[in-house]
Length: 76
Image (cartoon, rainbow, N blue to C red; front, side, top):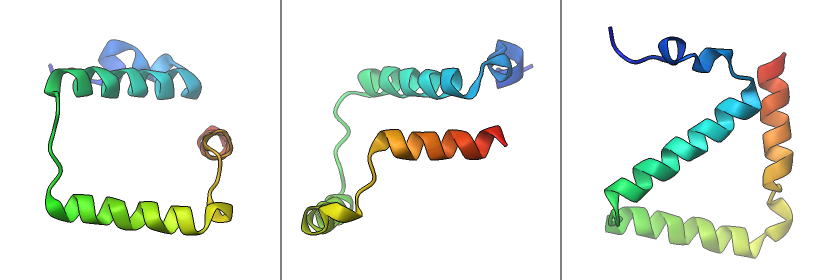
């Protein structure tokens, strides 16, 4: 049997705990993979998005607001 959220008991964690665990897993993968280079297309897209964000800072939503909204949707 493969590893799953259920076999590890992750499905029993509340939403906040699962989101925290996702972040920790992401960080551990990032540490192991080291410096992953971006393709020129990816860099160009990121530069474009950064420029758009800088041009319209009022369009940004703070992370805490986004997180509350997502958790609210999941909890319904």
